[in-house]
Every structure is written in C-alpha cells, then in structure tokens.
Amino acid sequence: MRRRAVAVAFSGGRDSTALLHATATEAASLDITVFALHVHHGLSAQADEWLTHCDAVCRRWARRGLPVELVAFRIETRPGVGDSVEAWARRARYRALREMALARGVDLVLLGHHRRDQAETFILQALRGGGVASLAAMPKVVRRDGITWARPWLELPREAIEAYARRHRLRWIEDDSNDDDRFARNRLRHRVWPALAASFDDAEAALAAAAARVQHAAELVDEIAALDLVAISAGAGLDLVAWRRLSGARQRHALLRWLRQELDRSPPATLVERLMREALASGPPRRWPIEGGELQSYRGRLRKAMASAPGFSAAAIAVDLSRPGLHEIAGWGGAFHVDVVEHGGIPMRTAMHLELRARAPGDRFQAGADRPPRSLKLQFQARGIAPTLRDGPIAHGNGIVVYVPGLGIDARALAADGEAQVSIHWLPG
Image (cartoon, rainbow, N blue to C red):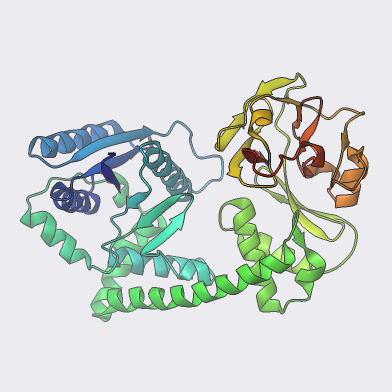
C-alpha cells in the first residue's frame, strides 16, 4: 500500500520552517511522508547556502524521527527584459512546486502565508488598481492545475508563528532581498506598515477580513461568468455576437474569465480595456498582441493564436498517443493532451501507431458519419477557423486522417461502442 504524503513549500525562512516543523510533527503520528519542496531561484548569491541549510534542517529532523524529505528544484531561466522580478519569480516558483509535487504523486501543497501576508497583499492589489479577483488576495484553499494549494495559517497573526518558532527553537535563514526597497512589498513593510499599525490597532485583522469578504463576492462573480461562458464560448473561441448581448458588467467578467483560461494567468488591465472598447464594435477582423502570439476576431469569434515556433518539422514522425496525459511533440512547439474516454474517441490500438505530419493538399476530413469527406480548407472555412489557427500536426492512422487541430477527430476514425479508446486534443505551445 502506497504511503500517504503531503508537501510543504520550504524556502528556509521562519514562516515556512515553522509550517514544515508543525506538519512533520503531526505527520509522524499519522504515517504520512512530508516532502519539503525548495525552489532554488538562482537570483541571490546566497541561494546555494539556503539550499544547503534546508538540506541540513531536513536531515537533522529526519534523524529525530520526523518523516520529512527535501526535494529541490533549480530554475535555469531568468526574467526577460521588462519583466517584474517579483512576478516572474512567483510564477516560476509555483510551476516548480507543482512539478515537484506531481512527480511524487502528491496533490496537496501547504504554503506558509499568514494574516499579515494577506493584509499586505490586499493593500498592494488595491494600489495596483486590481479588480475583484485581485482584491480577494490569497484563498485559504484552492484547487488549480491538479494541485490543492492550502494556507493553513492564513488566519493566524505573524506573532503566533514567531512564538511557535521560538518555543521549538527553530533555526531559519533571512532572505537578504527582504531588505531591498526596490520591491513593492518590501517598501510596504518597511515604510507604510509601521505607520499604519501605529494608527490603527486592528489594521491587520481588518484588512484580512476585507479580503475574505471580497473573496465571497469574487466567487459569486466567477460563478456567473462561468455560466455565461457555457453559453458564449461553445466551440472554438468566444462568440462575440452572444457576448455583446450581455450587460456591461457581465461582459467584462465573462471576458476576464475567458482570458484567464486562454492565457493561463490574469490578463493585463490594458488588454481588457482595449478588448472591451474595440471588440464590442462589429467590423473587420482585428488583432491584439499577447505574449507569444495574438488574439484575433474572425467571423464573429475571438480566438487565441500563438506564434508559430520556428523550424516546425516537415518530416513525418511516429508517435504513441495511447497513454493518458500530456505528450510534448518535438519540432511542433506544442503537445497532445490524451484522455481515456468511453465514447467519441479513437481506438487505443490506433492511437498507439499514429503518424504526425504537416498538412498536404490532398488531405480530406469527414466531420460526421452522414457527411462526405471534404478538403481541409473547406472544413476550416465552414468552422470559421482563422488561417493563422490552422497550423499543427495532422495525425494519420490506418491510411486516413485521424485528427486535425481545430477540427477534431475524423468521423472515419471514431472507435466503436465498447472499444477501448482515447480522445486526443492538440495544445499549441
């Protein structure tokens, strides 16, 4: 029987050290393994020393009988020109934490944020002009990308964590970047918070409570936006005609939710404002640049089009897409997502022996059992697929087209009822 496990994000600082110690102490009596996930950003000259410290702490606790094991991840990339170092590091950290957790079969990651962190986040988001989702600050528990992220100490004051660390004589490291006033959070902590706390005794609790109330409102807004998207985003892209029929407030929040899904992050406020202003007006096709590609309005739909990766492979390659999960396709700048299904898929035996290649002039696609095969160009036009969205590897098997990005599975390749089958979906890079 596989032993249960939980993960804790472990930077080596006071808060994460205290959380890791408390979690490992509790886990010892429950036969649970605790993975201490450490992300080596490589931004500080002391990063190697921090990793050494974290390793020493985990080894020392393990010798004392605590079920803790260090897992480290080195980030090799660096922020791009013009990137916010804080935002880049945060995104890279969460990606690394997710990868480490899933690689060990863990889907629960604990984070050491406390009430002061929540209050600070609320202030920073307000100063940045954030909307409801941003002002909601940090959720106590959220499921995202296959991981449950939990902040068990989010309602505790910082003083309680400091007392825990002193009581158990914990050792931790101080991040020298916490003294760097180039970062907004540090300026808030060093210059603003002392004056705020001196003027309002309950500032921390009041701001954290305000964030919690906004969270409730944000959840309601998001539920309404999700219902709207069911009606206006069926098929490829966002149905602009149906979107324009919504009230202004619902237009904005439906658009925000759709953009977060498509971009895998909160969209820039400037992009949202441009779309609200320009996409509301009917007219000729338009384009809006985004990181790595663009958004396009085409035949009444708004779609994301990613820039083609250079050097797409023209040579045919053999692949096995019978296993569920994500399959990166070298040379094509994307991946196939595979799911086991009961109907509407291709036979698993076909998926084991597929050939991927570029579109050829003679390729034809059959959209339904009672419909004739037609050229890919005509099928793309009938579906309203923009020309820039028609790139991607065509999957062939048993002498026929099996799958076309943007069109889906060819009717001739569908599995019979009761046959072992999988669905495949192309995800551009």
